[in-house]
Image 1: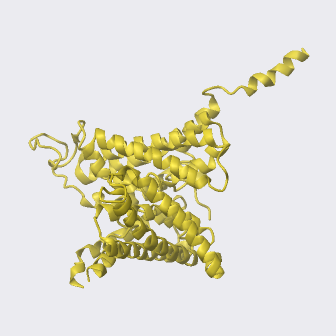
Image 2: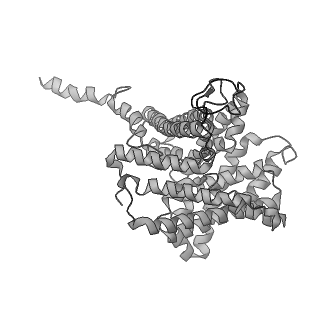
Image 3: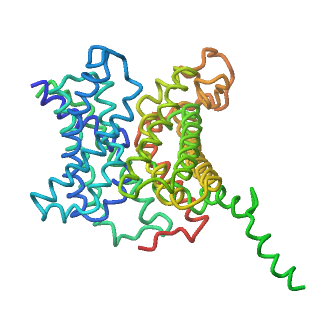
Length: 199
Length: 239
């Protein structure tokens, strides 16, 4: 039950994009059509779900004082996390290419882009600062990815709809995308009142 | 006669340490090629820190430092980095510099370090840094890459501070709260000022809590882009 709470909390209440602004670059760059947004969203769920538990293991068994080396190596955390993320993205890319070329082609360049998606590294850092245990970190990773997926699908759908609207020229494209994201953030704020423990 | 005409191009080839080209490297990202409002890079780790001006200034300094030095080091190593692993090499350079910044900030000012929390670490995945390394430092000489890094860092910092000024002024009525320069400007006293009797302008002003929320940062940047593009029409998105 606790895990479901964490999933819902990380997907809706503490949405990575709309509350913490993480993964904003690819969120704005890849949200022009729903189709590509869908592919990137799926890939992010996947990578977050995999890297989060691995980074949990690294924090607890390699970097902490109770770990393998018996030393407090927290200062190496950023370097190790980013190395794990980069190699996981590479691995995921190779696995998908081998087993499902169709999915690989539809994701295309978005897979390597995920390495520099702040939502992934940010998720891992939040996982450490929230002091989750192992199953909780999996739920947090999947929930965060799902929240990111929902947000990018929503903005892509809205941007497809407003393409032919009469918007002042200097506000077109980027400007209006920012304002829409702000409004979506406000809408997600209303979910703050939900108590995940009630589920 | 012939000798002098031959010599002239030689003089031209020697690059000045700080000529007009170098100046452009710094001024371009401040306006025409701003990392945030034009290239849309590096928004990720930026917006959450702009509720207050002081942490934003610290964040800007950190980013200028990281971009400038990672550009310099990447540029020095550019000929010996194999193409296939260049991303990982760049990430290691950036991550090392960010770790340095994080530890220095932790030692110097723990309060601000706590306020910035994970966002200092997220400079690693700040797309501006990677973007500049890929687009500029891998193909240019160290000194110019260094300047390009500083320019882009400043362009990023400028937007960060403008947004933070709006958000803090209307959200809390203060400027530079949390620093020795803390200044109550409008509205009644806030949590940062102990002297509740100090006279400030517009005492009737109620703090607008919307500005403290993350959504307000999006509105402020959206409007900033609008203003920037109206003022500089060649940036208007035609698509």
